[in-house]
Image 1 (cartoon, rainbow, N blue to C red):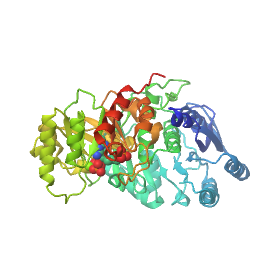
Image 2 (image 1 turned 180 degrees about the vertical axis):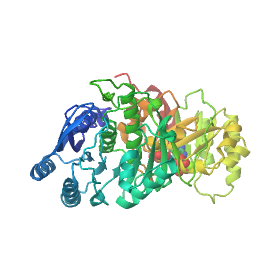
Image 3 (image 1 turned 30 degrees about the vertical axis):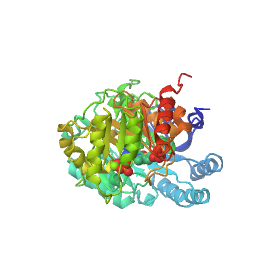
Image 4 (image 1 turned 120 degrees about the horizontal axis):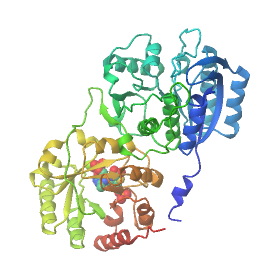
Length: 525
Ligand SMILES: Cc1ncc(COP(=O)(O)OP(=O)(O)O)c(N)n1
Ligand SMILES: Cc1nc(C(=O)O)sc1CCOP(=O)(O)O
Ligand SMILES: [Mg+2]
């Protein structure tokens, strides 16, 4: 019973690949099927084109009939509606027009009737990794019929140049072209820099993410451009890299993650796949399928690529040696003292009303009480007062990170805890090496209004799998006695609670009961 939500997650989300068949098995529909199945999705296929293709040549390209293209789409929509769609090779303008009309009418109607959103990821395939083009006559395809219908488009350097109709010689031209494309097609853009090319993308595989249309994530990460930088793996076996990336993005979105997360996870998946790629035939070989990525080294370094705020690098905060345990978060000094007396060794003072009388005094007293009881007292938000009175630590949200003087906090040897609500925020938090990372909100909460959806146990499990051992991980949001055991089963290090303690008639007693429930929860099964 404890593992109910994890069991439910075994229901596989349906993802469609609308793409061409690669008879060589490394790219196209074949790569998409392998990727989607590897990422625990059920893959359906709509074949647009047959290609007679090996690792060294594309010898014949034969589009399916209009009737067959539409029959596949309509048949699947009846019985296996998608959570996400990846679109790959479209052989000619006619297919682009046909598919965009189907998306605008049939899929749109389906979404409206069912109140669902379907993510649509377009990989505008134009050229095979052996160098042969798919659109034999080399006339430029017009992708504008897809305007307003896509969640993301993922061109490589060549494709981006074709799409905006100019050559792109450096990073700033590349970024500008990605922004132009985003405006033209009214969609988010991931401009891939993985193919070997000019100096700026020689040492790393750097992608530019122009995010103009994403909701359900922090406003701080909307309407921005980011550079996602991964190590360049020395390998000639890159056949199907773009297909794998786009179908991984679709799969991760179908599993309920936001676009930012899907891109980060998919990029890690491709990096791991190239690391284990293998040769077959005389040309570039395919990637391996290595499952949901759990190695932090495979994930990209994220930096901002615009005038918006960015985080410092080369910073590291105090390491916390003891476990945090059950970590109460309170808004009243009297409750803080009660809980210290009841034995709390980690506690946070979280006063959200900036007009609270005697605010500075209360923060100073909380810090002194922490010293008296030899407890770790974290101050939420008020990092300058925490510095002034030499608190044990500060807890900051993602948005606060850009206002706070992180170097001063680190130099004064204060611990830093950071909130996170997604893979993307976890990765950003980890880049400044905090003392712990909070993962929230796991379950619905009434304590505060959240911009993101509850993460649930499945996502918590993924985050723990990736970050366990790198930082102490604290789960927060809607945790009470009834959920202690299921949360502990994920392997998360610690839990923070507000209402489960503060709304009790006897907060000290509630703290002691929850704390021992957490310590003693049996996770051996
Ligand atoms: C342990 C812990 N985790 C998360 C939070 C939330 O902090 P933040 O994002 O700064 O939001 P507010 O608490 O300021 O509303 C926290 N306080 N503690
Ligand atoms: C303060 C806070 N931060 C969260 C986050 O996800 O960052 S959730 C949260 C409230 C947690 O309260 P309760 O234990 O009463 O549900
Ligand atoms: Mg805060």
